[in-house]
Image (tube, rainbow, N blue to C red; front, top):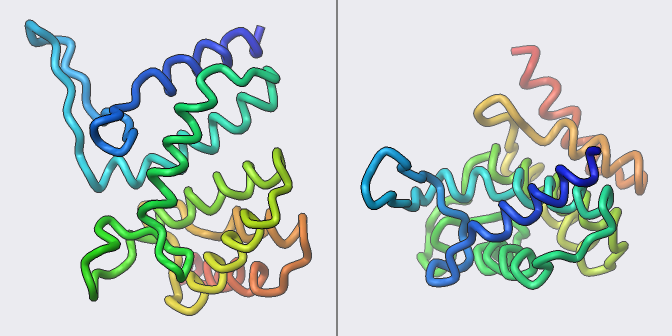
Length: 178
């Protein structure tokens, strides 16, 4: 049953967070070492965070479970702590002049925020989504590592009719043609 497997996955993802490192997920686990060890890899942790948050939200819809919800909320806090007032994620938001994280990270996290909005309909999340879309459009952020804002932007436009979402989708689509 998919719901049973989703519940196991919720447990696995939320149990793999490191509270000493802003509740980031461990990126690498080495089972071939005795004792086994784990390590963090900063850019990859940010790049993959949106995927994990999107998955958690969708699995919660499937199962109706709130298992380890406090850990998932802490994981969202990690993302929000690295989000500046422009709605974009930065690896080190306290360092002036640092560019935002890559378009892949922005797009994956945008999709995760949209999923969470669909689950909770939080007006603050809507504000963050639209701010992120506007900033991605301003920065002309298109696909990075094969995933860009096209799908999340179209999804947001379908949900809300927000015109800048369609403008961002068009920008990314045009980048595909080049």
